[in-house]
Structures are given as structure tokens and as C-alpha cells.
Length: 169
Image (cartoon, rainbow, N blue to C red; front, side, top):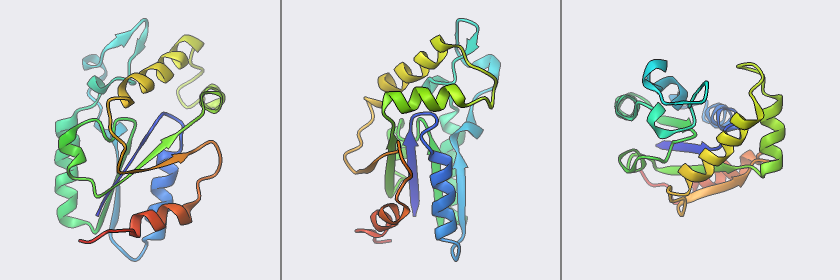
């Protein structure tokens, strides 16, 4: 099974991936974080004085997809997560179950302003992250995804039920 988790920055994709992995502890489960497949900094577009991590051009999709294909051969469950998890149709064809996390703008800005992992980001860049998400995720189709408002704690029982529904493999 390949599980894809997409959504805006700070929505809880990594945390949800870990919860799913813990639930399926009796299986061989691996998480592939899309952040681990970005191009070198000098190959990523720049906006003002910042590297633009918020555009699909920042991801080495070929390397990412090859990693997914390789893991499918050796693992029972492969969880892929990232802001552009559903960006490429070729990757979407590998995904059995999709989960898309949404955030209300107010929660996004609150979470992003308190996220200091890379230092304090300027307000204009946080606005850019939101606008890039809206721009790039509108083109992704989420008809077959479980859509979760991640403004509050995610109901893992709902997620697990979705993962078990209509899954034949």
C-alpha cells in the first residue's frame, strides 16, 4: 500500500505519517518525506532574498518517484508526505490512498509565525507560502482523497477507517 499525505506547510503531514506508521507497527512501514528530495539550494528558484521552497521546481520529482518505486518492492506500506505529494500524475498513479490536510488561513498564519525551525520568517514570505499553496494545490485533484481540516487534532480512527475502506491489494 502507498499512502500519500499532502497539504500546506505546518498542517501536520509528518505527524500524521508517524501516527499511521505506529498504527501499522506489525507491518514493514517506511515514510518518505518530500523535503528529503529537494534540489541543491543553487538549483532552486529564489524569491527576493529567500530560496523558494514553496514551488514544485524545488523538488527533484524523478529522484522522489524512483525512491517510491524502490521502496514499494521492499516495504508493506510506503507513506509519502509533502506539500507537493500529489503534484505529478505519475506519482499519483502509485498512490493507493490519498489524505489531504487543510488549514484555515488564520491557523496557518498562527502556526507558521510560531515555527522557528529555520528562524523567524518575514511576513511577506509567510504570505508567499500561503499564496503558493493556493496556486499549486488548486491544480491537484483531491476527489479520491480524505480531506481533513487540520485546525484541530486529527482523528486517527477516521484516517485508519479510510485506509481500510475499499482497499484490495
